[in-house]
Length: 404
Image (cartoon, rainbow, N blue to C red; front, side):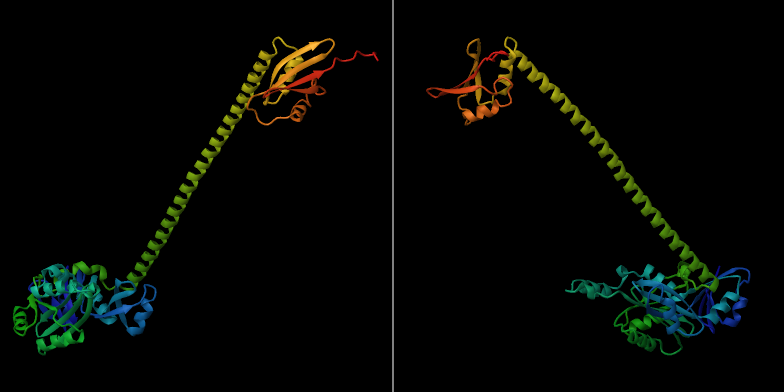
């Protein structure tokens, strides 16, 4: 694929072969109509503050007329814009079946950034950056400044770089190169940038005048020749390509939104499934614990029934129902001492208060025996023997039916 650098309609550098200068009218003699060609044009450059949605309207206001532009993002809402006339682009595309038109300053920036990084700058540049880095405010350290100068016959192309931004591009016809360089530096407020060129005599002349000039190691007669294929992604697009690119961006955005929606739904479904599963587990665990609690309660009830029934049976093996009734009716403050039944006196029981028991009185005993079928109507007599308190319960014998 042949490469051309279109500086102006009257000045085109043919990079293939030994290299030569031609005009736009002579271009058809050097281009294969059925092949492919890579054209690098020297456009206007601008720094535009806009968003991706408003950059089209902003560019129509700043560059009215028949122009095409290509923008790349420098930082948030700040674009580096390359502008070229539609007539020139149409003429280049018509010369061959497959034509790629790229901005030449972007190729220069790629080569300069690759071959002349900040670490390979001169001792003066490294010292300046070092002194700036130890300053109190590190935010004041500026990006490296470079000026690439392409000498094309009697013409000069100045590409002014500050960091990754292309500040300006100038095409100068003839004139004094040192003077034009000084004007370029003054217009862009540069004090002592690194000057790069492929022309040895021009580099010596600049050094003699005190400029920080170096001979670039880039391949080709011009600095940006070796970087043309690296900036094909920034090529100027036709209307059809712009429509395809917008459609592709729309599809990519739609796919991204769909992917995010699907991912969100998947995550939500996973979270819902996880918590649903945990809820089912907790419900099953709660049900199991409830069943275990009910089973333990039944077992405890059976144990209590068996225990109290055995106690009652052990205490009522050799006694009558009256003794069993009295033993289950007495409060814990007292203990049963004896039970006697005589024909004349009836049923007599002796109850003794436990040592150290809680406060207890005769009325408490009456209340405790109120539900007893045998001792509810018993006559209670208190007996004292030192600190021992006894209660004698007497139930008279029942009067036979029919006796007065």
